[in-house]
Amino acid sequence: MDKILRADAAGPAFQRLAEANHIFLAGVVPVAALSPAGSYLGKAADIALGIAIPVHSHVAINSVLSDYVPKSVRGVARVGALASSSIMLLGLLKLNLMGPGLTATVKELWKKK
Image (cartoon, rainbow, N blue to C red; front, side, top):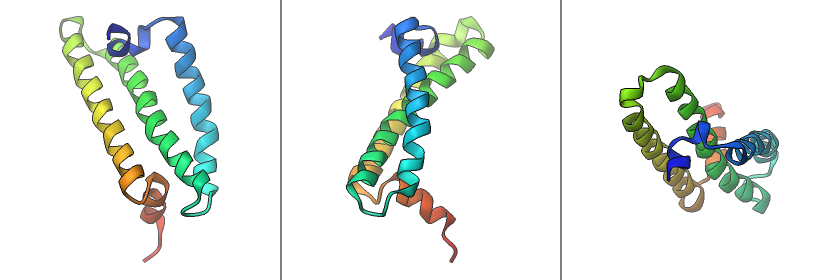
């Protein structure tokens, strides 16, 4: 549990996982954006994004916490970051599994009315 709470300093294996996640996101975002609506590829990309984005943001926010939050409250801040990342993960999974999906939702934001 400590490695998840301290995701920015969890060791070299976790750092390699975070770097692989960055590369994965760079590849899957264009696939999601360019896949046809309702396709299996688009659905798979949405689910992958729904997992990879919270992981990416959790590691990043933990780096910010390490740099800017005083040590005396850092533990509480890390628990809050984990709660926020978990809520984001559940919300994106719900959007992808029970709703239109992440890509369709983002595309809807850019649609001209």
